[in-house]
Length: 259
Image (cartoon, rainbow, N blue to C red; front, side):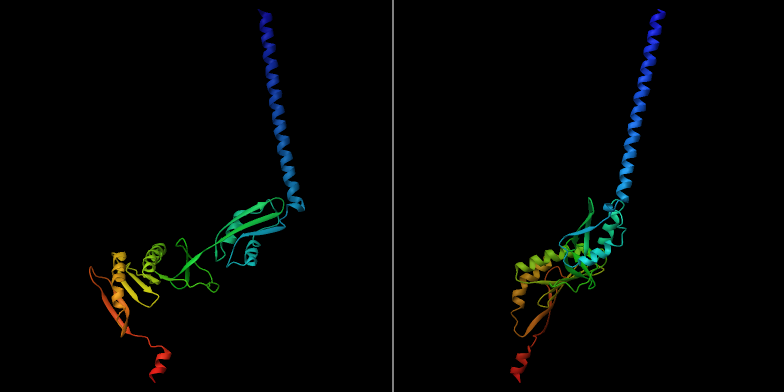
């Protein structure tokens, strides 16, 4: 019986030594791997090849010059490929007036790729700002805009509602051969529309679509007048409308012919 106890005790001690040896060996391997990783990282940072040498501007920026993008990126610390703060570069590029979003990617061994998406301006907002296709306001130079943008006016926070309403009305007018050029929403949420031919429509706050349709139904009869032209149409009634006329605009040739 004593011999059996001695054997079991020896087996237990051998097992403990094996476990301790295995654990020690595992910890040694982990330590060596971490040391090699840190040494490799330090070598890359010290090495010249870890510096940024190339910048690629991707996307199709129309209003933002490549020079402006480069100058913005240069505000970040570009000395190390690994230590470069990609989020900072993204913020610097996005701060440019026409840039809606930017994605930044580091490509080994020495390249920084910046993909730029610009705002798509669809309307002027309160004369001094712009609206993009999502109904968001942004501020950017307007000199480079070649197309004629509609003018929208309204209180702060009503940008998306105004843009969506403009789209609905524009489609309705276009089907009937008319073109909407401007829209205004007052502080009390009363709507006014201006057509390209100079007619102003007062819609009020309620039943906007029905009131626009009422004007469209009546307009063919209004424009038959030969002596005057429609100036303002007040549609703020449950039924009917009020029309204000103005004298016909006389062209320079017509004036000469009368002399």
